[in-house]
Image (cartoon, rainbow, N blue to C red; front, side, top):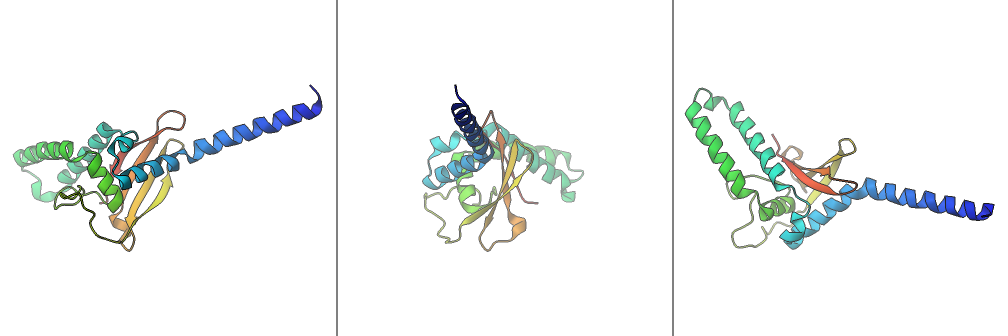
Length: 180
């Protein structure tokens, strides 16, 4: 093998390595785009491939439990807190399904109750012309947050979708962080 062939092989190896590294780095944005496209198309099967539902439910349960414990009105009411905790667990188990998360992605917010955070009963869009804008916050190599905000909405109302790496370049939605 002459020096020209060695150089060509070296350049090809560098290009392949650079391509693999670029794919590895940009893979969370590709996964988020797949999630968003599936949400817009209401394709639950494609959407489910990128969501770890047990982890999302567990995260939401802990967030709602923490909020209930912070509420001073419930302090000292152990039976009420216990019943509320059981109801929240059942509500989240029921509410966290593909349609609910897809609707939350389209709307840029996730709220349980008052008709928010779940798909409209008739399957129709909400009629709002504003779209959800996503900004990213990378937290290390294996976690990235996508903060969803409605155009013209308050920044503090943004929910965050937490994607975590599973394997080389596969990403799953593992958490929905609710605004305070």
